Image (cartoon, rainbow, N blue to C red; front, side, top):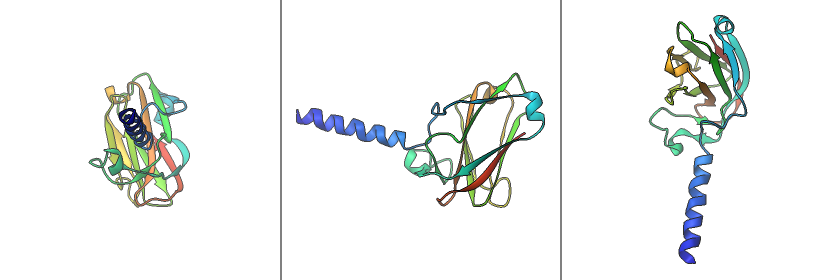
Length: 151
C-alpha cells in the first residue's frame, strides 16, 4: 500500500509539473486565416506574461522567459502561402515569444523586433501546414499589454 501511495503521489506531482508548462493542443480554438488575410497584417491584442519559466519546463535551451500554459493565440493557415509568415510583437515591456509550429518545432525569440520585442519568421511549407500555437510571455515576469501581428 505504501508503494502504491508513493507511486500515486509521484505520478500526480509529475503531471502537475507538465500542466504548468506551455503545452501544445491546449488552445480553446484556432483562428483560420487565408492567404488574402495574411497579405495584410492581422493584429491580435493580448496580455504578455505567465507564471511558467522555460527552464523549469525543459525548454530552457530555447531561451529565457515566463509564459502561460495555454497558448495566447492559435491559428491555422487555409491553403498554401507562397512565402513564409512573420510573427511580431509590440508591447509595453520586455516581451518574449514562443511558437510551436504545425510540424512540431519550437521557436523562441526575445528581441528580434527591436525595442525589447520579439519577432519570428516561419518558413512556408510543413511549419504552416496545420495548427500553430503562439505564446507571448515576458523576459523577467509580470504582465503587460501586447499586440501580436501576423503578416
